[in-house]
Length: 401
Image (cartoon, rainbow, N blue to C red):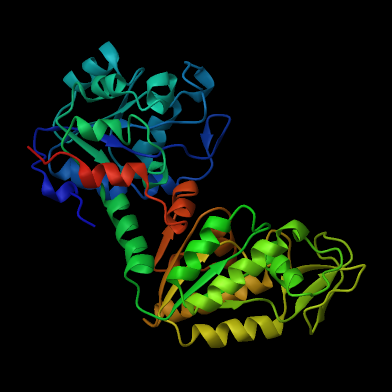
């Protein structure tokens, strides 16, 4: 992809407007997961080392264009300082006098966090006048928030028409990893798509079957495809009204040369509770009084055998009810195999979206994948083949001065 990065700019003494995603999980003013903060550190380190004056902008929650103190970013500065090892001041607005005074007070290598972008209606409206106010005190715009790139907001799209623009290291790594995995992959490509319903991922499935060699389905989504093939699913989760869509996808997959992999067997229970009594049925049918909560050993073996011949893996969604043990076994076993092959240099593995990161963390292998995306909606829209406004804006933005 032809976009500028931090390394393409002379940063010394320049004021950089850094779009970050600091919409972090928090409870009672306490950050419960610092992943998004931690992954920004390479960009922060580079900005400091190169003597930039950095103004950080982000949204937090959904204040809907009004100042609401429960959505203030003011509580974040201590966490940023601890995780990044730098001083981070705070300004109580992202535009106007507070932003101007914050910019004036910045030294080379310094940082200030500006108040929540979404306190202003112009942010989500992608208003060019609001973007001009954001840009008023900056020389360069850097977007390091891929997770926000599917939104055409003032801080992701309109701003690029005003300032010389580029990506931070996190966003550049994400874009390159995703392009390598889906646009220019080493084949064969194996995709895992799990989750409850195919109705929420129709666009993903239709795009995937044009791009990958194997499409492995899990969870309630896989059950719907089995039902479309005539399997009895008992009390399992599946969508009867999506059977025709499932058959259409299978027909299209055959035409495109994509093999759809469905469960060969099931782990079944009478009731979905932790440590419920369960058994494995060595077929695709499920008894009337039972429900499928995971794939069985035959399915796991078949997936592993297929993976052995592949070079790229894309993963979105678990294979079973991974939140309830021991019904995380299918997801865990396949995840460990992907991790092993990745560590041996045989696979490039990219995962993200929804519960995927939680499932891979649960399996203890997230650090062993080639790339894990923390983006939710943006990752899914990329899998759907959509153009992300925040990415398109960077590709088309004005040249650096």
